[in-house]
Image (cartoon, rainbow, N blue to C red):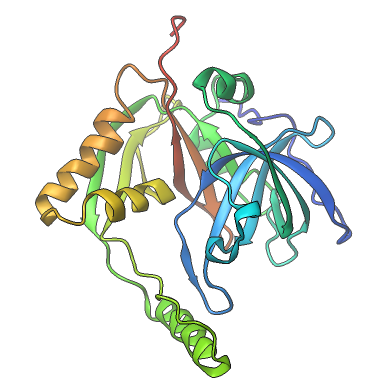
Length: 280
């Protein structure tokens, strides 16, 4: 199968460190991860709305706890922000934003408005198998792919932070104590992890198992499920993110992205789930 680029040609990362103003439709807010410098950081991804720079954009690091009201934003906001190439991340889509320059232009509330930008990125025949098989640091690391069949969502107890992640949290808390900053609640791991099982468009696909690292998956646990037992909470997560979000009356696609250190390892960063169109 010939693999096609998801959205135009993959742009080369600029050679210099000069900032440019990006206009981005935010489509992904990944779950926060521990950071020794910031306490916690979030990776944002979205679609560039600049005709001169088409393609996917990754913005990192972002610390939402440190953002003022002027810089808060959510999924499907159109934002502008000055950003430079991320030199510690060689993936072509990665940029380092200067968050004090971020402005929210508007929010795309309806699925109709979102589809105008995103549906044409779903190029027929592009598969997760092809993206993973051909992945290097120089190839596409963000995409929107349509699964041929979603076979399940496995909900398991989160293993907790690794020793290196916990060390980052401890280091950050120690800095706060040292400089007398206001107390901050250390980032807690989510109660559950989720893994989507699915078949992609490749006829030879043997199945994919990819972690769901969407912030919405974590926020749903914190805000809605704290009072439930493990069994009841896991059932509610499955109902929401498998049977509701991925229901047969939705045109489901997955935002996927790889890991910088392991280019062939992709995760589900979020779910695109507009109502199924009459043509499908």
